[in-house]
Amino acid sequence: MDPAVDAERARQLSLFRPLGYQRNSCGYCKSDNGSEFGVFQPTPPTLGGGIPASLTGNHPGASYYTSSVSVRPAHYEELVNRGWRRSGTLYYKPNLQRSCCPHYTMRLEASAFKPRRDQRKAVNRWNKFILGPEYIRRAAYLCPKTREEKKQRRDTFDLADAVHQAEYDRVKRPIDPKTKKPLEPAHRFEVNLEGDSISQAKFELFLKYQTTVHKEDVSKWQTKDFKRFLCSGITRSPANAARSDEQKLGSWHQCYRLDGKLIAVAVLDLMPHGVSSVYIFYDPAYEAWEFGKLSAMREIAMAAEEKYQYYYMGYYIHSCQKMRYKGTFRPQYILDPESYTWHPLDGELAQKLDKRSYVSLSGDRARSSNGTTTTTGDTETAADAGINDEEVSLFDVHMPGVLTLDEMRTIDLDNWLLLVHGTFVHMNDLRGWESMPMNNPQSVKGIIAELAAVLGPAVVENSAVVLFD
Image (cartoon, rainbow, N blue to C red; front, side, top):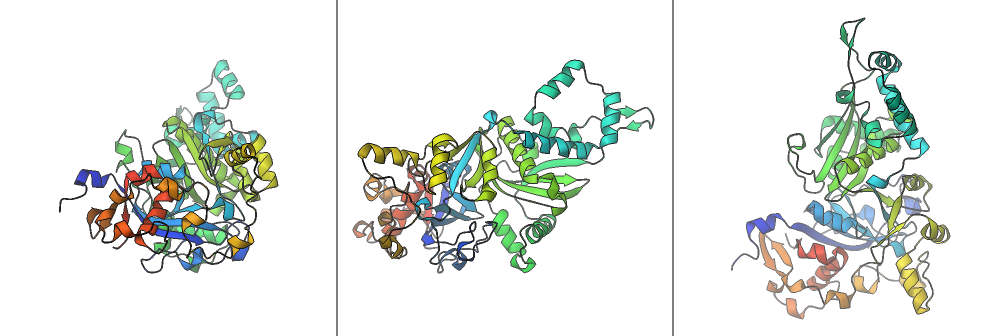
């Protein structure tokens, strides 16, 4: 049998193992013992076990899950723009209609970002701490600014200039006539973009952050858990960021070091058109410096400087006070869960979110034009509550944004690729494929169809399924 794809085509594919639609606990409102801080901590999916027990049960939310050890950045971007996120190698798309705290994908256009006063203040305060009063005083004398430069700095906040101002390789170090030595700042501050590899320094910093800030028990985390959670991202390129002008793609760690010591790590997914913030952990000794704001400002600047266009801050939960800060980075846009269009997080959308947890402006408008009632999405119907999601087809759940059975008939499932023991075959090479029902969640075709319906046509066309290995 001739191979279904050649080696070059195989390298360009993303691989997905379907794990199915499952109920899950809420990590934000603490429903059913959810974590107050919403830190997502999955255990590795297994062939026989499906979704980890920590993510399942009769809980106030539901998501579709898949796992992968190989996802191309462009394909992940397509998924993010369809409401997906990842935690290590576990990828998930929440059902916003069946959630106590709907998770909305949000993004802003980096070049349009207008920092608020408190955000500007956080960056300026950090820069003053790094440079120190003595350096600032002597540098003003040895490297005086012109009147125009002073006016420009006073009247205009340049984001890129501000976030780089205190970096050691950007700091001016004139020879001080008093000491005959270069003028040094109070601290040596360095920021480097590194691969998402594990190190003892990163793991120890992560443990310190989780146990101090999130009050977690130290025994909860082993090195393997940390690696799976934050060091197992999407396919990265180029291999050496420092030696290439090629656009950086994939999963990276932006490492902050102060006087040679690692003090913060921002986990980032770099996609062709966007920088996606995954997580940040830092030394609790520097909590007062507002690393959440500092890292977001730096990442927005990075998106603008390196032409990524968009900055994704992850999910936004309107009902969660701890999430409201994300809305202060403006202008923010929210992904419509039904049409996958983007709407400003203000005006009509914000007003509706104040009244009900699930909102789809496109859906509201369509229902209004048809004369039907707007769905609240705040509670399940009695019939829904009695549904065992493991037994019914995903097509009967009516999850927002998922292709319907009729729409699935336009997808060429027969020729979707399946990876079996290192060899690619087509789905219709499977014995009995033609006679399998698409709406039977227990059949192979039903499992494959549900995965395709959630991934969407563009990703299906450029991916393969791992099912039996």
